[in-house]
Image 1: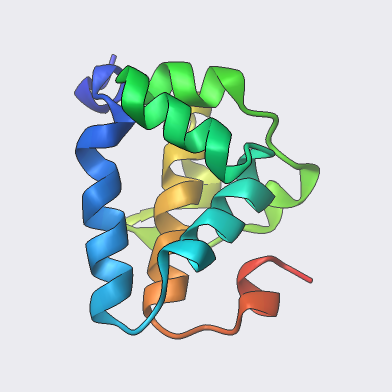
Image 2 (image 1 turned 90 degrees about the vertical axis):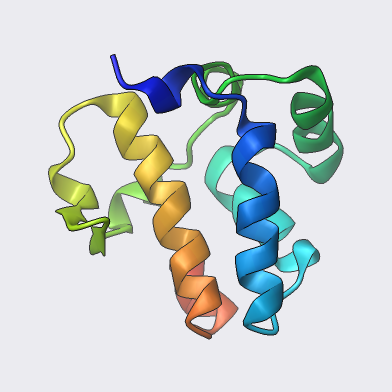
Length: 113
């Protein structure tokens, strides 16, 4: 098991927000991307952050949309479409979406529209 699975998402969330804000993106855009990926609205995400929910628990509560399989590319030197562990792949999907936002990709492309 990977250590990230038992890490509270609240420990990583501020890094996502800071990365995006440094690049001129907003928390609202992060919320939109997370909602698209997981089906969780901002209030639900906030509840998970406050509760100290782990990545494992966060993604257990999520309903990943079928289009998530369209998320491809490399995160941390690994192709997300080749990640074998289903939970790790979901975490990498989220990482990839945050990276795309930070790089200035249009929201329509990030959300695979």
